[in-house]
Image (cartoon, rainbow over all chains, first blue to last red; front, side):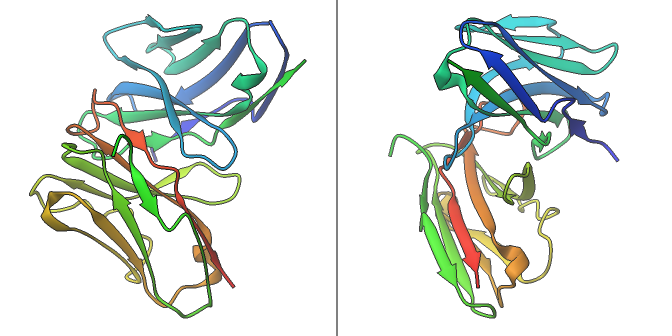
Length: 112
Length: 115
């Protein structure tokens, strides 16, 4: 079946370094992708999104890259801070879907 | 309110009892979603409401689960005859229109524990 998955369940980085979180998707019809951040005990928080007609989109300290050829999505966080520690989920929505399909999540741990 | 509001934030119930979880979406949002998140897991789609259209119930795990959305705003998720495997965080979300291209905002969730 169609799915969205993550390569690394846990990522540990030093404060100040850049972080890269990866995600693979299998639905070639997906045209909208989102990254969410979820802190312990809280609901998912929208970070950044990208449509399939784009390869890259930048926000404040975050960049999302989309490679449709290999169906791969990544989230880059520049100058990672302790407050970035959380679980990050990628999600996708096929153009006919009524839902977001979420990956399993990657835990980002920032070491001081 | 400014965000998606859910209640109760925590609920402990005995196996076999019914529970109701409430979601108040962002004002003006026509689309409302329910997801379930088990401990340490990803989000599992349950149901989607969009305006006056028939809801997409394709994610409901059994007939013990049902949801309503009255007046196009507040939604209630009902779990009948709760089982221990129903223990999870139930997350509600809303968006200004359908899920494609419209930011979906989540509430803080209702943490359900069935004992």
